[in-house]
Length: 305
Length: 278
Image 1 (spheres, chains in turn brown, red):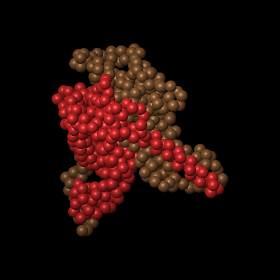
Image 2 (spheres, helix red, strand yellow):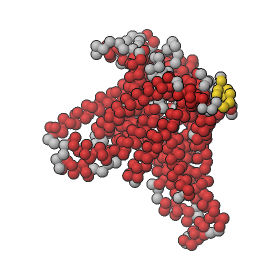
Image 3 (cartoon, chains in turn orange, blue):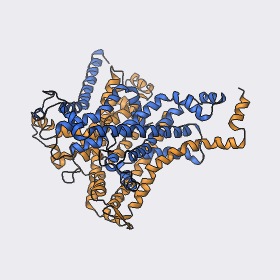
Image 4 (spheres, helix red, strand yellow):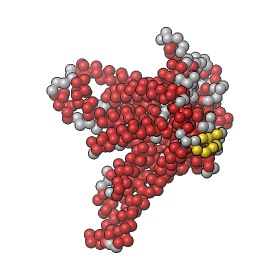
């Protein structure tokens, strides 16, 4: 078929051209509507709910900014924010260091490397609820392995989930077990896509492994590292599943992250308005991190392309 | 490096990896071990192998704890929502990968997609609960299917867009010169070429949907629509904990995903990596 007839097919008449111009939008609209229905709509609906008063789950009309004032003066809310911050600030750096270490170990010619990789990432692939089951079984005071293990080490029987500090640290350990693989996976992908020439040049120059890492690998890996850390931080702030099944926020309020407190406010006390006020405030803080994540991701995808 | 030092580093690397693999796998084994034990043996102190293997705990999941319904619900909900999102998301990804759109619509769409991926679940479930209650969709499979279909669409667009960009335009343009319309060129030529990407995307969507807890927890209340993770959580929450069935429930919850991981290893790892970063 000749080129001329192909051109007629693509843009012959005015109507045809309009239809061709509309094609991408027609393809895009159903997906964007579906997305908006489960994201934008709930957020706007939730923002509206945060300005209403609810009683036994029934909308009692506008409350102005009262919910926000109440939340702002609620000491339990601030405690939940503090607990969440502590959780994230302890867990994410540990996950990053361990993930980076593992990625450096695996990013070389090894036998069974694909099996090692898939084994190491298993913890992040199973449902967080199942992770909860696993650690309930490990931490259990009567049938678990944590107590006998600590006893053997001469550290007594801590009954991890029964005391405030140990429950909090026990949950951080769960998070580290589950999510170090994500950092490992992303950083491994980043490491294997790095150019090898500068490293080889450095080795020829007689630089030690450690020097080569700090002067060459780390700067090159920085964009990927930033993406991985911000994404993990955002997800960690919203942690809910494992905590809900393991401690429900207890003992006391020692493991009550903001998501657990908001859940209880909404579904145990049916205070939808107050719960949404908390969550909208949280979203406002997260938006900064999300913008940073998008910025870092754009930079890495441009660098890779 | 001298050969001796090289051998030593090699041993150190494998040593460190062995420790890592043990830490990653032992908790799984403890769950499987407990699920195969009889109650007496569960309480008989730490033993790393079931003394008398029994599948009784698994039987009880079905007879006493509705796990047959949970599994059916999960399968129906995952299959339907992933199928819908693959169709919607791939069409949108094609539009983004192939056309220059006006008013920065393409850029904005991708940002929207990314933001949806990062929203914490707890933020969405409170309003979704109120809205679904209004429409009578609480505690139905349909309600969950619609919500997961929408959420999955975000990473289908994200992942498929990058796969489709890698496919050269000439191929489909040749098909269009041969008389195909754009959509039939997409179906006959582009999709088969993008199949590996489509598989990786589907895997990621299946895992995310099968594993989700908070949405299913808040929007369902009985075994009519509850999914496997919610079923598992009902066993942990009990005051008088039944360790055997709880461990068995955990195994059932993890098994499909772990098998998946081992069978389609390459696509699986690719899907996970791409789902996280581009």
